[in-house]
Length: 297
Image (cartoon, rainbow, N blue to C red):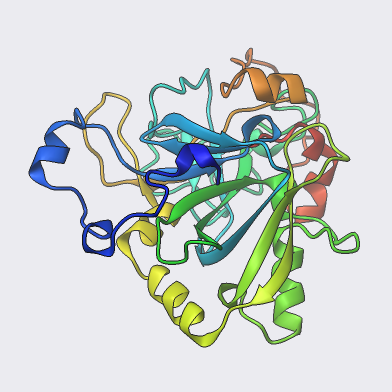
């Protein structure tokens, strides 16, 4: 991603590269997680390890290979302020399939996502919805296909919508490749920030096909534990004890580029009365009007 992320100028020797960390290394980690993800907060590609930012790349684009994706677009809702130092804390309500709250949710906000009061325009900041869309990807760097697998969590702005020339949101990109009979796991994908909008938004386009050896490498990467955990994360209960529930990672609510740069925490919302005859969003098209305030990790 940048020179800051290069451990050795000549690369890591093959005989130590795939070792998961011996007991001595683990003793020096202080119990922290080594999970790696790419954040797009503030319109910058940021490398986050164990919840802490360790490097950033201010380039407007990045070439990756998508090796795995969550099967469904998820939803997550936070009633109050999210503390970025409490990485992995479960939302107040979430849905892994985007249709109904998961079984592990203690206080579901509604029987289904389509009719949930947190899915009404205005339940969040401004005209946005308090419950937000998110899709997780597992990616590898195009220049290091055998290297680390990174998690990338995309907000609605980067998922839905129509293509504008070569600028395609994620689902339009998937349909484009499928229409040509090409799997997304078999191409180098360029992720690029859309500079026509204030909040961080990525668009996608294919750069080149992988050769057979590269494709086999990426196919294997998609089946690794790192890739599986990138698209389905085990979170902790709010009391800090371990939990086996799987939920999409927390996403802050942001209303401007300045807010996106300054903080990853959504504002605590005041309790409000329900609008008269509320109309919950039931289709993707229903949420387009609130995209300008959707968050970006």
